[in-house]
Image (cartoon, rainbow, N blue to C red; front, side, top):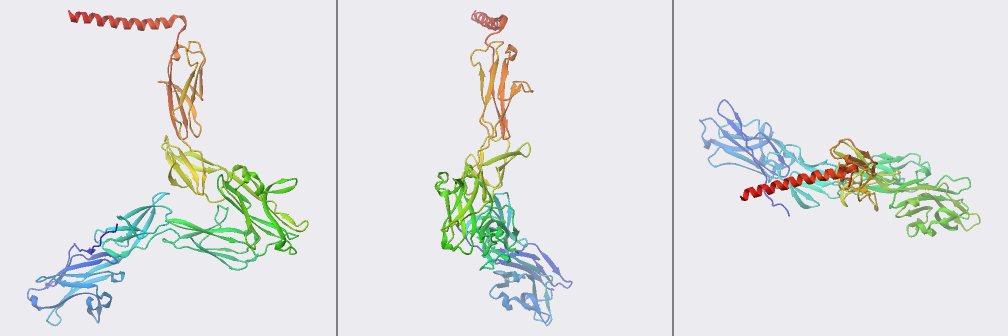
Length: 601
């Protein structure tokens, strides 16, 4: 649905009176006007002159902003206003107005009204005049929280009328209002229009498009060269740039340009540029390999990048290598290249033949290149090992293994709980090693996605279940954390409890983190015991009553109650208690019968 068009006119309400001592004056209805670029501006005035002048003596009336040779220049003759200016005075009236359509920022000026009679030199200009400020629009972006942004349509001055804005997303109308909430990381383009001024549209705001990354020199890169990487992305607001090397958390540089002054084999690997603004982020990767590498003494070498990888269980791992061999060996002499972690009878075992990696391993080498890779999908904790690359030729002894290799650590995810205050908790997605790829987490509450980020604030005492997922690894989910469910409480012996017996109470609940247990007797503040099991070694009538078990963890607490009554007591006390109760009931019953008989009589 698109809003209907309507003319936007800026009306001037307050009155400014300018009067000379001899009766000449001009009243402007407003002295300052802020108008949107592309809108229509209406300025009005009321003029007077001395009583001795007849209305028919007025020969000319017009508006101006400029002077030439000390004389006002009629706006209608100014080419900058061609076709955009209308003004007139109402019939038999001294009320006049100026109308400027499709106003431009260059129209910002002081506008004055002048009138003159048919007598030489008899004229008057209302000064000071009306100051017009024409403003464009910008969308301002403010972060509401880690998930949402607030967009606001903003002008450089306060518009004189009640401005109404329309919001568009990718050319489609979505909402009316001065602000708009959008999700962080959106790739859409948002802009606002001012109602009645459809030629006046704000520049769109949007997150960075996929960056373009270039390298210089673009041809052969030799060790010792100065290598320059350049990154650029289309974004509004303008993006900031950060450079990372793959599998490293700390940035290598910031800014559009990243220079490696003394390029060596150790700099080999994938670099990515991350472009970011208030709307979102995007990145692109470039691979750097030196055309020549420092050889080992006999010419054989394998370079790994990275040499250590921490990966989330269920994710995909990429490991790269670059190998060299002595000049006497031709590329066509290479008969096999593979990766391994184990040996059998002193010989490496190709990962592709290992049943533990069945259908999860891919590797190869790029065409006409000594640049090779290993990809392992759905990694498991059992995949944690040292991975090595081996290549061999058809010649006797023509084989080489790059050692040490690449150490892979595979970690699961856990949610850590930290109390912020008496009301709020902070949940953090945690791994046992620092993940090599910059992790992005999604949080779920009872299987519903609620937020993206490394942490999540939740209210203490919540009965909901919270878990985090690692993006790009949907089968890798942390165990859920949640407060204790209502505990189950049991007693032993479960049948007749006699005085003098040993009575054991047991409490259990479902909770993560695991719950701690505390036992209370009703109407007592101090706990009777702690732990899942509470034993009363010599049960007596004094132990009768309600006991409750409270289960508690960092997420919350819950409790259940159990009533203990001895079935019999030593020394006939049970009988006397029962007799007293029975006698009391009998007396009440007898009294009711007597009262009934008396009533009938």
